[in-house]
Length: 92
Image (tube, rainbow, N blue to C red; front, side):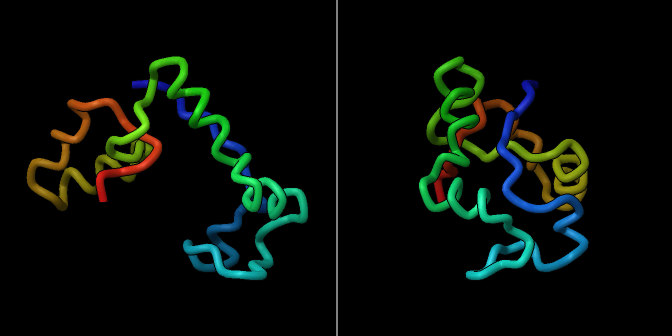
């Protein structure tokens, strides 16, 4: 287990205010957040985790603990994905 650091690119409680997928002109993004996303600087914390050895470039995307537990109950064998280092991008 490791702590995944991320830049917050949405306003607080954004999951309550709208859909989970970001849309163009999404009202949940601030001006600074739009710049972070447009320049891909929002991915820097994950790149730092790769350099530290906590993550790999390709591997299963890390999930929040609650989401991991829920999917383990829904999908047989889902827990096996924890046997490899998480990655910035998945195989898909």
